[in-house]
Image (cartoon, rainbow, N blue to C red):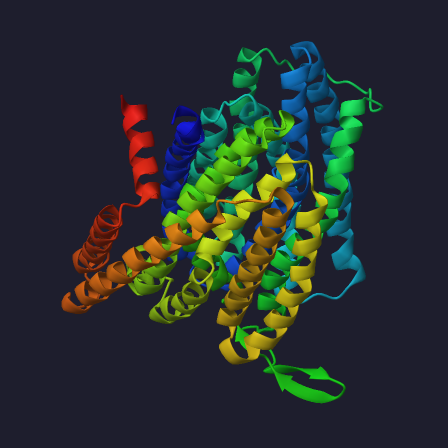
Length: 539
């Protein structure tokens, strides 16, 4: 039982730290929604922040971590610590050189583009913000690399705490810096951008003492012919190409949300072959996508991504030892636990989307219309929460076997599907169409990946997964009824904060109580796993 639940203990550490970060992140979003609402300034900021995050996923926690952890874990298992530390120094040096060059090139481009092209207000604001936020790439990618090293050493606490620094800096930036930059939203938003850059520096500084404690002192090394580095690069390249397509597609959601939105005081449409076509979206589309995604990311980050982060080194260790029996057992258990949380989370978010938004966001600049638009986005995003959670675990299972090509092929194939759905559904569902396209693509992706992995490993425990899903669906059904009835009983409070709080807390408590009670009566093994893990950790 100890082996089976050890990764759950690590997942709990990551989950608790991530929960703290998400709570601060929620506080930050509440403040930002109140200050900026669904304005053009926030639309521009969303894009300016997403672009550095795109590169973070490419060169940081995405491709590099997925390629580095299995190889570094193998070095820890089969070679000396000196050899393993050397690999860290060489990889870190190359990463720093690439990122430094990328930042310099980007800053030059952002300053030249406005002099070459005639841009309207929203794109000029995006580029100005990018000049401030893009250097964040250098710091956050080095943070992600440090986190990959520490996670490989089964150290999860400080890497999981690092994002807290960003949220604290972000909040302080909104409260203290934004008034310094001017009276309009277009000027105030630069205070947030600078705060993010400072947050990246602090996150990196937090990792260094822990690395030194583990015996790793970064020393630049230009030995780029190192065999370990060559293997990492060989694993990285297909991931980068695959992630580039996927992340560009994610970025396209925000770009489409701005490009296909009517600007305040602008024209009502655009011309295609001389035909006037009205814009399907309006200002604020990128903003409501951001706010909706942030609420969706709360359960996903606290448990789904935390589980995947914690289980990845265990996958890698089993794969390095060719212990496919324990690998399969770990995978089956991880998927069952993720779906045990992900499925009710999907349904719960759908049912409680209005109380959530009304309590956390609806005030000052965030109007009732903003609430309605964000609720539509959450409705469609929520359909895929279970799939988003499970996909992180399945993809890491492939990565741990040093098979980076399969997830890349499947992910790249989903790009076309997602883009077609985006450009089709926005005409019917507006920004909700962008969210629905994401949910559909994620669901199709997880089905394909699971089928491939099942065939690759000849997983025999999938019947247990189906039984687990059936029990979870039954418990979720009763949870849904309880939540809906409770929500209908409680009256609306005409904007009163206490009533808003009650309308969220009481149905949520009733739903959770019902779900866990029915799961207990159905003798859910996943409930038992979680309880055992929490109890052992406490004792």
